[in-house]
Structures are given as structure tokens and as C-alpha cells.
Image (cartoon, rainbow, N blue to C red; front, side, top):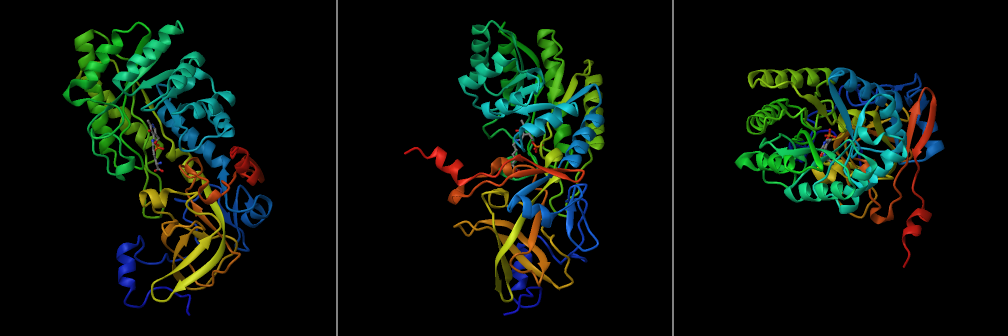
Length: 463
Ligand code: LLP
């Protein structure tokens, strides 16, 4: 049976309407800088390198599957956000995208703050030396323990997500004899153009307090009435993997309107607004993300304009990019295992990982790119679906892409832009061992999160 799955044959029509690519890329060996980390390139022999190290050597040393994170690129992106927003704004990296102690240290060194949303993230941040006052604590259902720890450790702000939480945080702060700085998270009623599961500003969902029908104004009233809370600002996060700035602009406008209403009612000008994270990145060559300086300019212009119109002092802006910093900086390296051509349809390429190291395709129908990285090939393109080794047919890593038709077991392929929400959402499904994260910089590689072992799995199994 031929492995050349592209493109003739009547059944291809279905594949292409369902798939993401209308045609194979002009050059299968090319690495689009939009989707690959900054230091990724190919040697003259055709092996892909990152940070000056060949993936073949990296696979030998660290095994596959593994995430390779380009530290230089991470630092450059973090710095670009920091510089774009300048001294009148704060950048809080959203730790949920990917967090480890090394990453916390890089962020600290690059002058960023950190957003955490669980006791585990807070513990990681503090253990790596992030000063508590540079940490913001999020979450729609923080536990008593999490609230107490955050207040005790002195986190810079707790983002209040509900009326019950106002009472809980006030109570904990009072019992500890502290005055806790807080923001209130509001839902501004924007429909962000992204997957339903990662859109967070429409009202019919679990996060935040609605601006509509006066709920947010009521939350402000209650917080201002509590001595143990210091209300420093309003927070809005409209969703994730968003390209269109319009949603952020509407959010900024509505949050500023709330600040004006608070000033009118209470004579208080709240000093901060946080516009959340959510900026999209390129997963495939079709995506065109905004640069941090464009985003900073757009947001600060709209906030300044709206504040001038409302005769408010311009508050300090903060943002919380997660994906936009770490997403493009890593790729997942896999070894090709079994290959199953389905004539006239597509070829299934199984790799040694899958939905346990990247759940995003199964969960959000996410699109990814893929490339053969251990060598170049001049073979014709074949339409592939890259799948994992889990006992589930939805175990898809890359739904539709092209790889050379001479692909063979043992080849290394890599999926770029897996720095965000891949390791952090990895699971032990089928008792898979979660892959390591290896940081690469200037010709040196070091493990920053080690590969799980069978002993790790068995250590938790105490029955
Ligand atoms: N701030 C808040 C309050 C958030 O909830 C989030 C993400 C962020 C900032 C960072 O958003 P980012 O800049 O990374 O888009 N697992 C999903 C994404 C969930 C995002 C949750 N909150 C995915 O893989 O696409």
C-alpha cells in the first residue's frame, strides 16, 4: 500500500473540508519562525537544533517524549512584555501555562511578577524565591488553606472572585491581624472569539462577578466596608488564545466605567486595573499573533482615553500573559513508532507520547504543526494524523498535517509551540510517565522538571 496519502482520490474531499490544511506547505523541511522557538534552526546536514544542540543528541541524552524549552527565547519574550509595558505597568506571568522553579527565577530576574491560582503554584513560586508581594492569587474557589497561606505569606494581591470569597478573605485577614490588598474580578460581558472552554468574560460561566445588573458595584461596596481588605483595583480576564484586540478594548472601557462609578459613589479612585492574559500565539503558519508592544500600546491608549473622558487619574495597568510568553518557546520531541497508511484517506503516525503530554487537541480541537527534525527529506508530502499511544481513538496530537512520505519508525518529529498548557495539563493516563522539561541555552541543556518514573507512580499507590 502506498504511503503517499496526498492528495488524489475521492475521499480526500472529506479530509480537506474537515482538516486545517488546504495544501501541503511548499517546503516540508522549512521551519516557520512564527511557530518555532527563536534559536531553532537546521544544521547543514538537516538535523534540527535548539540552543545550538542537535535534537538527535538531545533525544539520546534525555529520551523521548520530552519538552525542550528555549531559555533564551523565554527570557526574550518575558523581557519584551516587560519593556513594552514599561514602568507604569506590571506584567504578571500566568503560572498555569507552565510553572517550575527555574521559570520562576527567570521571571524574577527579568522583572516580571507572577499570577498563581492554587496552593501548589504558590508553593512553587515561593520556594523559588519570588517575593510574595510580586504574586497575585487567583481562582474561583480558593480553599480556606490557600487563602490563609496567601495572606500569611503576604501575597501582593488576592483577586476576589465571588461574594462568598469577599467574606472569607476578609475573615482570614482579620484573624491574622492583616489588611490584605485585593482586586475584584469582574465579568465584563464580552464574547471572546475563542473556544468556549477558554472564554471567560461572558456572564454565563463560573468566574467573576458580573458588571451587568450592578453586581460588581455591590461587590465594591462590600469590600470597601471591610477594614481587613484594601481594594486596589478591578480585574478582568476575557479568555485565552485571542487575536482580536476588540474584546480587550471593550473590557478596558467597561472596567474604567466601573472605576468612574466607584469614584462617583465613594469618592475613591482605585489605583489599578488588570486586564488579564489571553493573547494568542501561532500554532500553525496561519496564525498571526500581535507583538507585546502593539498590545501595550493599544491597551494603554484605550485606558488613558477612557480615563481622560471620565476625568479619572489613569490607573496602573497590569496584564497576565501566560501562553504568549512560554507557548512558543518549547517543542515536544517524539519518536515515530508505528505508521498506518489508510489508502486515499490519511496516514496515522503513532508517537511515544500523546494526550497525556498534550491534551489540547482532544480538549479544544487545537491545531498544531509538526516537522521531521532528525533529518531532511525530499520525499513527497503525505497527509498525516499524529496520534499517541493511549487507549483512545481521540488520542490525537496533530489532527492534520503533512510529513514526508518516507517517514519511518525511529525518525524524530517535533510539535512546536507546546510550551503552554501541555506539561502543565499533562496526566498519567494509562500510567504514562510525564515527560521532562529540558531547558536549552547557549549549547547547554539541563533538566528543569525531570521525567516521571515508575517509582514515582508507585510511591503514590499506597493501597
Ligand atoms: N489570567 C487569568 C485570570 C487566567 O485565568 C488566565 C488563563 C491567564 C491570565 C493566562 O491566559 P493566557 O495568556 O495563557 O492565555 N488550558 C487552556 C487555557 C486556559 C487558560 C486559563 N486561564 C488552553 O490550553 O488553551
